[in-house]
Image 1 (cartoon, rainbow, N blue to C red):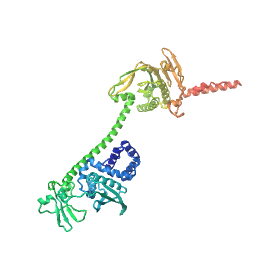
Image 2: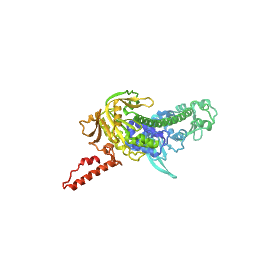
Image 3: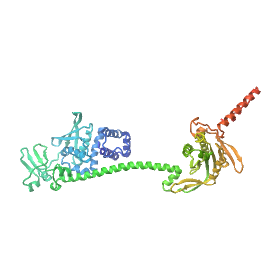
Image 4: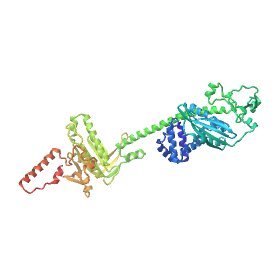
Length: 580
């Protein structure tokens, strides 16, 4: 069915029940909002029936009641959207209106939508004064309640009549391979007749004959001005079947039909003939339909462009979030300035790769880039896992900060956990020259920094201050595979026994090496199942050969002591744990 049917359904529900109910109906009918009422689209009957069934389920009515209510609303909505003049000009009586519905369907299908579709067919049969039988034929089964709603509202709104309709017969008739629904309605209305004088005044161009073609009466205009007249046009049998009335109305509804088929002009039509208005109205309507179609297509295109624009905007926001923290991006997006701030307690971490310069001299640039990409992808995962801020990467140097631009009580703890995670992940990246795991140095310092956005074309959130310089020096004075921590960082854990440190030296600055986190295993810190890494790192930086030699030395010493003495010697379990 035409998308206009779905649109009028939407108008009915939203006006009577509200938009939330319509959204519930769309969800039940498995439609996305906006895809259910594309006016120029032709929907399968199954989709329309599914929509009507969803409406009945949500509002708690039967499907027949839904279709009947829809038929009544359809007349109101059609007249509100500019078709009221056409409907009022179709016929002077309800019976004629019903007989003209076939032509109206033909006009809608062929002129407006340019579709060769077979619409329903209507035929009226007068059985007594004020009563008639309405025959309805349709290839679509189950839509006859719409007819009740439509005819009742047309009678009430256009003809000011109150009618009663009921189904007196319904049967299915087979024509070839098709099955038609044939429904017969009994329509009763209050009779309202016209005197002959009023009739001649209302129809000034009519001519009436009896069964023997004897002229009974004519309209006032023809009686006064015409003596001879050739009669081409529409003949109508009266309800009593005794007279034939010539209404002198051209069978043309568009300019094309008037010029090409009738070879006439509007000026040649009677001045008071409604056909003039109907032709001009239809011509205007055709132009409006073409414009509406273009507008709807433009709206559809604009909506999809809006979706694409939102996707591109999200990519831009994600890119900005890679350069700056999310809170800074949000402030800049809303037109707010984000001035540089002083942060009293920020933990800064530096890492670099041991012998990176020699490595670059012995392998291709492609190998170096691939190795750094593999390393930084894993580092980025650890940074995101522990919710710390990645400041920048310069060559083999990787810098992160904790406590900017938003601070928390556990900033330093998260940076230390991230340091352990970086150290573990680095052992899964291979040196392109030797084929062994790379080694990194880590330096950490806590102190005061100034942070702010630098640059216009390529804005970046940067950290400045002596804390950054000291963290860099902590990294350069560290050892391979060790985490070098300043005393200012360690002092935040005087009451925290989770982290274990060892002395680095007692020179100008007392520094430490981070040994481990006693509250979490390395597998919890890097969020991986135990045993997934190909190399399990012992945080003191001992390589595999040294650990094996120490292990064998302890075993040999134990065996010698066991031979010399019958008493079993004690083994330093903690020493074995440190090695493994």
